[in-house]
Structures are given as structure tokens and as C-alpha cells.
Image 1 (tube, rainbow, N blue to C red):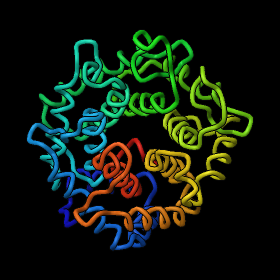
Image 2 (cartoon, one colour; image 1 turned 45 degrees about the horizontal axis):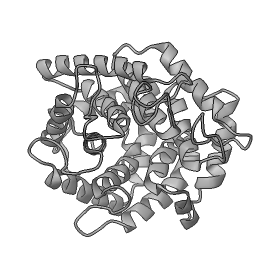
Image 3 (cartoon, rainbow, N blue to C red; image 1 turned 90 degrees about the vertical axis):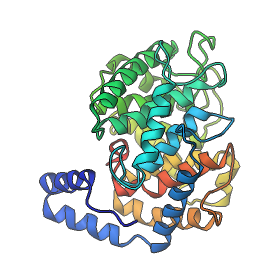
Amino acid sequence: MNHSLSRRDWLRRAAVLSVAGATCASARTSEAATRKASWNESIEKGLRWLSRTQSSRGQWNTQAYPTALAALAGTALIASGSTTTQGPYAKEIGRATDYLISKSRDNGLIGDPQSDPRYTYGHGFSMLMLSQVLGEEGLLDRREELVEVLSKAVKFSGSAQTAAGGWGYVSAREGNDFDEGSTTITQVQGLRGCRNAGIAVSAEVIEKAKEYIYECKNADGGISYSSRQRGSSRPAITAAALAALYNAGDYDSTHVPEMWAYAKEALHDISDSARAFGHWHYTYLYYSQVVYRQGDEVWANFRNRLYDRIASEQRPDGYWEGQIHPVYITACNLIMMQLDNGYLPIYQR
């Protein structure tokens, strides 16, 4: 992409120089130089496809998970460096933001329980996406609206948490207090994004969620499906739980090294056997975040293999195919391929 130096670019570069000094800035420049042109071309094709397929109302016309997919697609566009007011995808991000704001209900839920039987996914991904927008929002009225929507959304998440500390596909009250790992992770990341953006988040809610993850850990270091349905460890949920723990500030507990060892053994090779675990893109959306947090020594070679594989599977029109919907797969892939751009605070080291 051919960007002019935006406010976001300037702030990011200034922060790097002031905090880490010129040496770190040079290292980041060197890392950026190692990115293959084919990756950047793949990213640009994917971003253009998302732009073309967005409706004028700001969503992507998908029957399944409309709120969740709009939030994920918006997050992928933000990862390119655009904001609601600047950059080549500002219009699309603004539309997605307005669409998600319009889905906010009086009780704080972002989504539609009448049409989405698993609305906590959309709620969590929406908190994540809108919290990333808030920090760069230049329009006062939209900023005030975002603060209101996210403040209510945080309260809804707290009220929807189960007694065990997790979340299910719906709120605890509606779902008979059922919870499971994948929806729990969306809430933790969304809440952390809100907290980073200045929205008040209950420390008790986060601590309960961390304890929930620890309680679901098996002897092999992996995380089981649910506090109620303990069983064999799930590599995908383990990777997602690790990413959530990092977001929650947990790097040093006795659980984290065991979880990292399990996830690395199961997922680091990016072999075809990993597909047998199901939901490959969900798995690597989170596992890539975990590996990126380990530093360049671990990240660089893994990134090269991951990005080469993703780029090789792209369709000529710019999208990717897979489970759930092409918008979902395309958004996941674009988020992964833009992690080390460093534009999204929630994914930064």
C-alpha cells in the first residue's frame, strides 16, 4: 500500500523512539524489510476484497454471525493502519463502527439475540474492534458514543459471566450457567481492549476468568472444552487461552509455561495434521498471537511458514475459503498477516 504518513504512523514511530530508542527503531525497520512482497500483495488483495464486499450499512451480508464477522473484518482493516478518519480504509472502518454501534442494546449487548443464537461471539469481537477504534477516533460525537456503548458492553459481559468464571454462547442466565473456552476468550480479549482504551473493567471479572482457565487445564498443560465438560485437551482452546492470559497480564504463573509447551508441541509445525483439530484459522489466529509475544527469535521462522501458507491458499479475487464464511476466513488471515505491523494495541508485544 502507498500510505502517506498518518497521525497513527507518526504516533507509533514517536513511541518507538521515545521508549526503546533508535536501536529498537532500527530493528523494527529491519524486520519490516524482511517481509516478502508476496505477503504484502496478498494482504492488499484481501483488504480490497473486504472493502468491495462491505454493504453501504457497514456490515458484510452473511447469514451466520453477522455482528461477529463485521467486527472481525473491521479489525482486519484497522490492522492495516487505517482509522475511522485516516487511511485508505477509513470509510469502511467508519461504516463498520457505525454498524456495530447500531447493534448495541439497552442492556449493553452488542448483537441481536433474536437472530444469533451464539451472540457472545459477536459481543466479544465487537468490544475488541470498537476499543481499538476508540483510541484513534477523531470525531467527538462518535467518540462519546463509543465510550457509552463500550461502558454498557463491559457491564453486560460482567453480568453474563457464569459462576465458574467463564462465558457460554449466551449469557449465564439464558444459558443455564453453561460456559466453554472459545467464547470465554472473546470476552477476555474484548474486556482487555476496553480497559486499555480507558473503559472501567472490574478486576474481579478478569480474575474469575483467569481462574476459570486454570481450572480447565489438564495435566498435559492443555485446556479442556468447558468447566462442565472436562476431557481431552484442545489445542485451539489452549492457544486462545494463552493469548487471553497474556492480554490479562499473566505471563509468569506456573500454568503459562505448561500451556505454552503443550500448544507449541501441537501447533508450531503448521502441518496438515493440525487441521484434524478443527477450526484451523481460529486456532492460528490465536496461536500466532502467542508466538509473536515470544519475540523475534521464535516468531521469525514461524511467521515465514505461516504467511507463506496463507498467501498460497488465497483465491484470485482476494478472499480465502473455509469454515463458517469467506469473510471470517479472510478476516482471520489478514489479522494474522498484519500482526507485526504493530498497529493494533491489543496485539502489541
